[in-house]
Length: 99
Image (cartoon, rainbow, N blue to C red; front, side):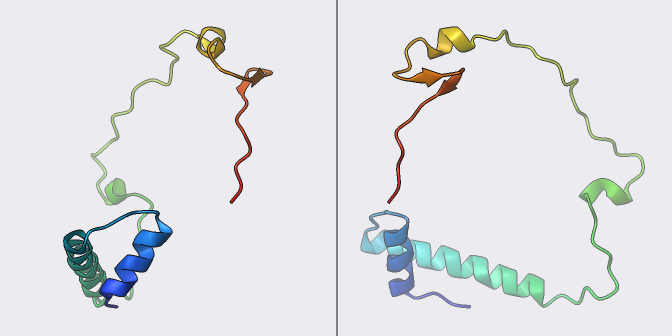
């Protein structure tokens, strides 16, 4: 898969980005390089290889260093919501935005 400058312009427009010509060309080079890498990875024969749930699943002596799941900050919901323009039942109310 190879993108063109018009593809980059369309993507930038959809993302609401204004890219200069130089930025568009640099983005084109970077994205096409990414797609080339993906094509190289897809070319590798992986028949018979089972997918891993986690990359360290094949290494028995590796364990994840997780911190204890404890609350370390006090609940400041009311203080944080004092400056909010609209709050209902502890939730911030925001205007509905639909394009």
